[in-house]
Every structure is written in C-alpha cells, then in structure tokens.
Amino acid sequence: MQRIAIAERPDWRASAERLGFQFHTIDGDPYWDESAYYAFSLEEIERDIETPTGELHELAMDLVGEVVRDESLLRRLAIPEPYWQWIAESWRDASPHLYGRMDFAYAGDGSGPAKLYELNYDTPTSLYEAAFFQWLWLEEQVGRGALAQGSDQYNLIQETLIEAFATIAKRLPRPLYFSAVRESLEDQGTIAYLADCAEQAGLATRKIAIEDIGLSEDGRYTDTDDYVIEALFKLYPLEFMFAEEFGAALPASRLVLIEPPWKAILSNKGILPLLWQRHEGHPNLLPAFFDDKPEEALPAGWVRKPLFSREGANIELRTNDGDAHRSDGPYTDAPYIRQAFHPLPKFDGGYPLIGSWVVGDRPCGLGVREDASLITQDTSRFVPHVIR
Amino acid sequence: MKRSRQLALLAIAQTPWLLVGCDGSSAPPQELTKQGFYTSIEACERDGNSAEVCQKASTAANTASTNAAPRYKTKAECIAEYGDLCTEREHESGGFWMPLMTGFMISQLLSPGRAPVYLDSNPIYRTRAGQYTEVYRDRGVGAPGGGWGTSGGGVSTRPVDIAPNRAITVSRSGFGSSAAARSGWGGSSRGG
Image 1: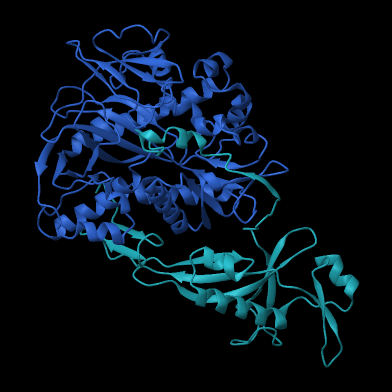
Image 2 (image 1 turned 45 degrees about the horizontal axis):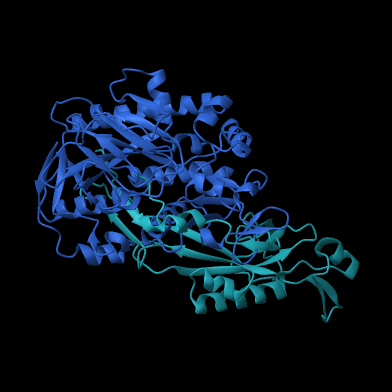
C-alpha cells in the first residue's frame, strides 16, 4: 500500500456537480481529494481486506442471532426495552438489509493484518464517492493516460447495490421512500444516489425529509400528501428514532424499515467487546471491553468510545506512550467501551482509514478516508484508490 | 477485474448517464421504464416531472378513460364495484354507468444520455375495497394499432401494486429532533 501523488482531472468539479456530487466540498473544506491515490496490490485487497471483511461479517451476523434471544445482552447494549420484541421479530423474519461498512486500520507494509475499528451497519455514508465517483475517477485517469492501462479498483459496490435492491424488491411494498435530515447536503446526496440505484433495480421511489414524516391516528407513518409510508429507507440512526416522539409507534406501524430494526445491534459499539469475548485473539479484532467506569482516567494504550457515537465524535484515546487525544461531540448519553489502541498508519496526507463495504452479505469494495488526526472525523477527506 | 465494467446514473445526473469502462465489453446500454402513479397533475409535478408531461399524461388518461372505463348497465352494478365514484354517461345506444378516474399511471422510458421519454399514460380507478386498478390496452390482443376502446383492441385491468394508501395525519415532525439537538456537530447522521 502506497500513497502516490497525481494531477487532478481539470474538470472534476464540473463532473461532480453534473453527476449528483454536490458535497465534494463541505462547508468550504475539500472532501473529495484526488491530488493523490492509494495503490494496493491485488493480494493486499483480497487477502487483507476482502476475505477478513467477509469473515467478520459472518461473525457479526451470528452474534445478532444470539443477542436478540438474550435480554441481558440487549440491556448491555442499551437498546430500549420497548423495541426488543420488534427487533427480535425483524431478525426472525429475516427483514431485508442493504449495506454496511467496516472501518479498518491497515498499513499494508507487512506490519500485520487489518484491525477492525468498528462497524457502521445502520447509517454508513461515504457511499456515493466510494461506489461511483471513485470508479469514474479511475476510468477517466486511465483514459487520459495518467494511470497505467490495466489499473483496477476494488469496487463492485454500485452493481451489488442494484442487485441487492432487486433481490429485496419482492418483499417491499411500493413505493420505497428514502429519507434523511433535510438540511444535510451530504445525506440528501447519499439518499438521492441510493434511490437512483433502487430505480435501476426497477423499484418505484419517493423522497421525504425525516422531519416531514407524519403519523396517522391509526399509528401509521405518512408522507406530506397523507399517503401511508409502507417501506422506508432511512439514513437516520435507529437509536435516534427510538428516542424521539414518533419512535414509540414503530413496532406497531407495520413499516418495512431499511436498515431493519435488528441493525440496532450491529450499529452499536457494544458489538466490539461481544465479538472479542467470543473470538478472542482473532487476527482482525482488537481487544475490547465494556467500560463500566467512564469517569476513571483512561490508561495508556486504550481508546474509549460511546456505544452510539458517529463521525468519530466523543472518542478518547491514549497512545502507548500516554499521549492523550480527544474528540468532542454530542454523544455523552450512553455507556462506553474500551478498545486496545492500534494507531492508523501515517502517510504524507495524514492517517488513512479503510472503509470496506458489505452489500447484502457480499464484500464488494472499499473507500479510503484520510484525516489529519488519529481520530477520523467529519473533517476527513476521501482519497481514491487503485489496484496495480 | 475487481471493479464494475459499466455504471449508470438515471435520476441524479443532469441527464441520464452511462459509462462503459476502459476494459468493458460492449454491453448494450440499459433501458428502463419508470412508472409513476399520481392522483393529480400537481402530485406528478412535485415528483420531478415536467408540467408538460404531467398535463399530457392526465389528458391522455382522461381520454382513455372515456373510451375504455369499465361499463355497467345500472348504477347499482357500478356502485357494487366502485362505490360512490360512479358517473352516468349518455350514449347513442343507451346510457351506461362507469367509474370516475382517480389517478393516472404514467410510463416513461429512461435511457442513458437522454431526457426521460414519455411513453403513455393509463387511467386508474379506485374500487370500493380501496384497491387501485389500472386499465390498460393489452398490446398482445386485438387488432394492431387499435385505439382505446375500439372493437377488438383488448382492454385489460390490473391491480396497482404501488397503491397510495391514505391516512389522516394527526402529527408531524416527530422524527429529526436528535439530529437537530446534535447539530453543533454537523447535523448529519454520517457513520464513521
């Protein structure tokens, strides 16, 4: 794995805006960054990323089956009790799921296997840029002669998404609504892209801001024209929905939700200590434990994460030398876990984090995000990759 | 190859878009029919269709309805099927009863590199049981080129599986408050 500088395509901003990538720059800061790329060997991709992703996905799915039957584990994951039965039923009925992303620390210098930082299995983003715009970058750079003929990329994400939509279509009432926070350009861009993939799979789609969803007197969710929403893809955390005013109506609403209710288990950082307990010593897992004393000072060599943090918020980290790093954030209302400190590798541009995508149940591509700090946050930049 | 040979975007690009990759074989470009069920021209436009297309679709469905709506000899027969949504029509061979159109199903062809192309629009009726039914010309039956309602032109019905089921909304904005409360950190729900 190497980081290699390359000239930007002169017209990429115009392409981005024409092709639905309005969030290439966020609040004036660059997000899409094609001034460099990461080069992998095929062996690094297949042996070190793709295979472990498939294996960890299986372990995680097995764990869901265990957790839904165990009240003490549901409580340990701080999942509110009124939703337990609904979650368990969604697992038993094999409610369709679409996608997830695993984040790995990986140096690719023979220093060891990729280590799983966490699962983003409920509201993973950086999807469009990984699945589509990164692919376009490669094709155009090969076409322009800036990359060698025969350069490849680990990226079957979009075609796998379309296949997955076509597979679950049979179980979905129509149309399928796509919803996200109204004011987030990035989230709106991501659901527009997902809706495009669903349309390509033959599904009729609609969009609605999460704030605009209504509730009827008989406990069903409605759109702004009072039509009942029977199938909803939400790019909005399940645990937020549980805590909000309309959450209580979820179990009885008969809504087909994507991601499904059982994803509440996999989007939870508590999955990390549970995986470690059951598979201690697994080469791709880091030691992890529930942290019942978050008020105590964190010892060197450990990272403290809230069960429900996103975007790298509220992470506390002490390196093996005892240096402390901390990210602020709003996720101060849940229990915590501790995970063994394992630093991201350092390259010229910063610290890259590997996002490895699973669509349906299939590992199918990756995206790299770089941050200037050891904690990858919403300040990170997306950098494309190549297999050579 | 570890990547896709071709990718397309249909709706989010300014025009539908397809690229066959450098190493791609010459696969035929994708063509898809997009269907949309609307109960009004306004709803059609709100869904991103042009005013012109929505007007055309509504008019076409209305015309088709005049010629091809299910016909009943008596008001009672029509009401048994469609409830109150029945109307009487005068006809030279005697009057009859037929349901009122409650919406239309518009079909458009989506193909990469082109704006959506209007194909046709069919009338939709709502049965007494609340099921929406589309009346369409069965192209596999009857004389070629036979218009709506012409003798021999097969007219068939099918249930609409994207039934817009309405309910009285009593409250809104019951989702979204957590993101707003945490919006000092971007207001996004981004994973990672």
